[in-house]
Length: 387
Image 1 (cartoon, helix red, strand yellow):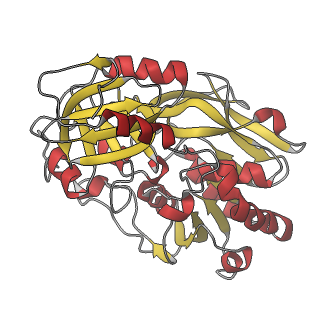
Image 2: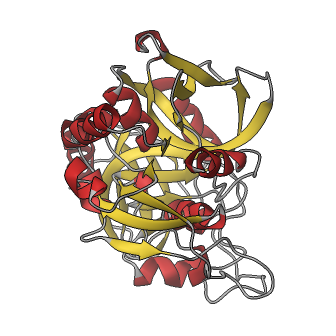
Image 3: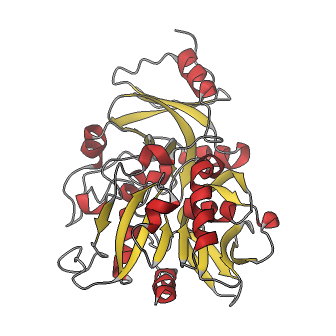
């Protein structure tokens, strides 16, 4: 063991620590499952939806700092899972989770994390940690939870510095479905939960780069019969289902890496059909790459449910949910591709469309899980384009 770097904070009897690649160390109290992980650290400003965030496949390879302090106070429920298991590698919070107080709760956040092998760290100055992320960009970190409070700081620092990061990393293959399946569950509705589609709808093939369940539910609620295919599906496999529209899902990792196999598939569909295409998040970036644009790594990304986005055609401002660390470079959009949405935080691109065809995509999450519902109309626009 070697002496630890100067701590950012040092509560009594710490059982967890976070070591940034620059040597900064935060001490806290562990909960969930003991262990060690390495990851890219981001922060999320949403006040609700911590379970949806932890199970969002777009967080593969990342640990999440929650800026809102009351994390865990509504417990957990299977209805809020966006995929079968948590995907984010760890969560960092200000206050330790309390006993849940919510009529939907089926258990505690602590037990849920422990069951699913995920680390939680409480008692952290999340404001200071968030400032560090903003100033230096999303850092590489090692996070350890040891009930005895024993840490090998030299090994943790080396682990943080050895982490390869997300640039050049294709994570869609790790979170995509293993085989195709159909989806007919719709958005949650009182009092029965998630109703099933009972009437035929428009046939949509959804490419799963890490699809959230609530996106698929929104497609079903907008009148779509959804068939989900793995991220590596070819154009021939997609078109064999005779779809009326193509959906490109959200997902994690570097879009340029995933684009090595996804872009040729999208390009072939664009060249050989006139089908409507709708993309969200990574799907937006995949479409942009297929149309000839480029993507860039952001300093600390956009993660939260309060992001203002302007629709350029109308000037309307929508409050949106976002989760992305890469963005489409608007300066590289080719002729015939129109920028439809921009972030009012930093002016980054948040949407595109083809000038002469019903092909469009957005960077934000119109399914709003968690988040506001200002952008749900995009699902209806996609459904109308297939009509």
